[in-house]
Length: 230
Ligand SMILES: Cc1ncc(CNC=O)c(N)n1
Image (tube, rainbow, N blue to C red; front, side, top):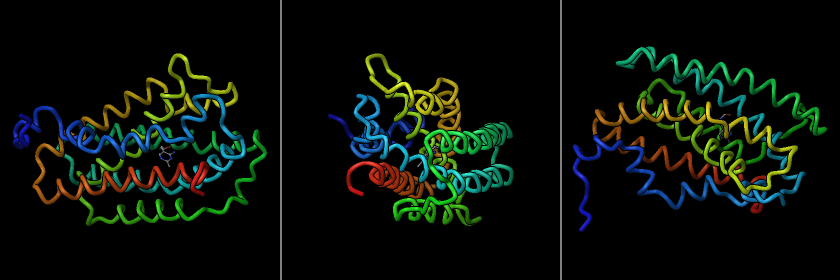
């Protein structure tokens, strides 16, 4: 018999693990999307990859101010000053990442200034913007931040596993989010989220869970832009 876990039991194992088990299907939909599986098995359509590259550059430009808003919340609301340092390290890598997108785009002949954001991208960026409001609790924001990073980490790590047939030209892209350092950074974010979720009131806990599910849905729609339902 598997009864409902008490609040105390959940706090010991971590709320994120509990939610990942509960929402396994949608998490798998976001991390093992057909687009990612096509990179992994080497059948990826390079036009689809270029579409993803241009759209993700626009996303990352909106993601940076979102991370800045999480940093502000950590500074104001966090009970642990090391949170800020983890978030700041994430912001620093975004600086690198934007430069990488530019050089990668040049390599693939993608004109970034001419990329028009598609609907799924606009919707995702608007969602991020809504979370930048000071009314959104730090706990909700840090959980969202973790989820966004964790989806990319899990997705691209899959393309680097033994037996994957990821084309050589795409391996560097996969390493950007699939490398161990990025994995450790995601673990640090997950620890912060778990710590906060473990001592948050039930109404904020519900908000964080709903927002996490929205992230997973947006990620699926984002992959869909390049592959399939576009
Ligand atoms: C759509 C999407 N989700 C998550 C990430 C990963 N975070 C920063 O790079 C990303 N680049 N794009």
